[in-house]
Image 1 (cartoon, rainbow, N blue to C red):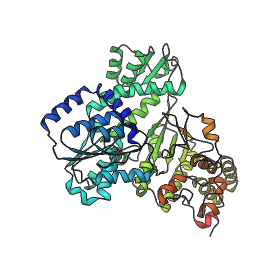
Image 2: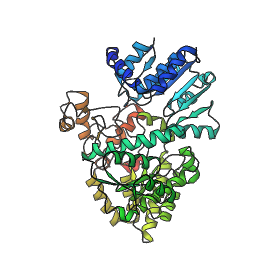
Image 3: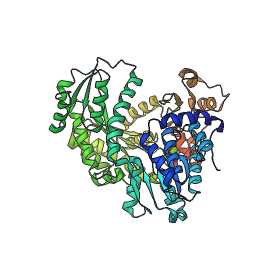
Image 4: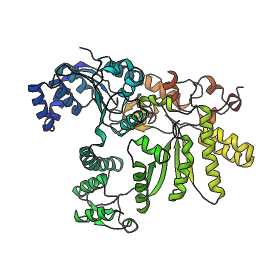
Length: 527
C-alpha cells in the first residue's frame, strides 16, 4: 500500500472522528451499505484531490465499499487532518497522500502520486488534478472516463478548457448543483458569516440589530441564523418579490437609508470582482450571466449605503480590458478599484503561465495611470490601487519624473515612508485555526500557533534558533539577504525586495530576484 502521511500513530484519533462524523451522514451511510452489497464500481480506479477531512473520509469509505480502488491527495494543505489521513490508510486501506501544511513541491508530488494510479474517474476540488492530467500527463488521459469538480475556481478553469476544445473528458459541475446553492449557500454561509463576526468582534449577538442587504440564498440563510441568535433582523432588497418573501418570513423590510439608522452590525465596504468585459468575466466564472449578476449585486450594495469598489486580478487574458473596468466604474458611479498582480504561491503556482510578461505589465500599469489621470483631469476623484507588485512604486515615480518633476518628488517621499513590501514585519496573517503566517501568501510556512504561544512571542522571535525564527529575522530586514538584481537595485529601500514567495515559486530560491519585477537594468541602476 502506498501513502505519504504525517504519522500512522494518529490513526486512533482519526478513526474516532471519522465514525463520529458518519453519524451525521446517514444518506451516505445508506449508499455505502448498498455499495457493499452491489459492488457497482468493482475494479474501477478513482483518483481524488479533495479536502482530507472526516467528511471526505466517509465519502472515500463509500467509494471503497463499491469495489473501487481509491487514491486520495489533499486539495488544500491547510484543511488536511493528519489523524483522518492516518485512519484512512490504516483502517480502510485507502492510499492517501496528504500532510497538513505541505509545501508546493510536496503538494504537486502528491498529485502526481494520484495520477500514477492511472485513474479512470477523477474527483477534483479546484481542478489542479485535472490540469496536471491535461498538461503534464497527457498519456494518462486515455484511461479517464469522466470526473467531478466541486468549486467555482475549478469550474472556471474547466469551462475555459472546454471552450478551447482541450477538455479531454466530461466533468460533472458539482459546484452549481441546486443542493449546493440551497444547503451550502443558504445554511452554510448563514452560519459561517455569523461565526466570522463573532470571531472577529467577540460581541454578544443576542439583542442586537443586523441589517442584511439582499435576500438571496446567502442573505436569507444569514437572516435565519441571525434570528435564531436572538437578533433583530432588517432586510433591504430592491427585488419586490424577494422583499415580499422576506416580509412573509417575519423580517422587517425597509429602504437602506432608513435601515442604516438601526444597525448594530453591518458592512462598510464591499469589493466586487470584475474579470474584464462581460464575455471575459462570464468565461472566467464559467457561468453565463455572472457579469450582470455582479453588476446587480454592486447596485444593491450601493442602494444599501455600502461603499463599493471593483477588484480585478490582471493576467494575460484580461489586461487589455482594464479600460472596460474603468468604463463600468464611471457608468455605475463607483470610485474605487484595486488591480491585483498575480502572486503565484501554493496552489497559485499553477498560474505562473497566466502572468503578464514585463512588457505587458508595463503597458497595463501605464493604462491604469492614463485612465486615472484622465478621470482626475475631468474633475473626478477616484481611488485607484495597484496591488502585490512593489515595482509599481518606482515605475510610477520614473513616469512622473518625465512629466511632472514636482509631483514626482512628492510621490518619492510617500514611497520612502511606505517602504514597500512589509511581509513579516508590518503585516501578517493569523488563520482561523490560530496558525500565524508572514502574510496570506505564506500558508505553506506556519510560524507558530497562538493557542500554544502568544502572537507577540511568535512575531517577535528573531532568535535564529529555529527555521521559523530565522525567517522572521530575515523578513524584519530583507536587504542583506536578497540576491541578484534585487540586491543591486537602487530602489531596494522603496520596494523592500518585493514578494519573496513569488521568487520561491518561480525559481526555488526564496531570496532570489522577484521574477515579476518589470523594471529594466537601467531603471534600477545596474546597467
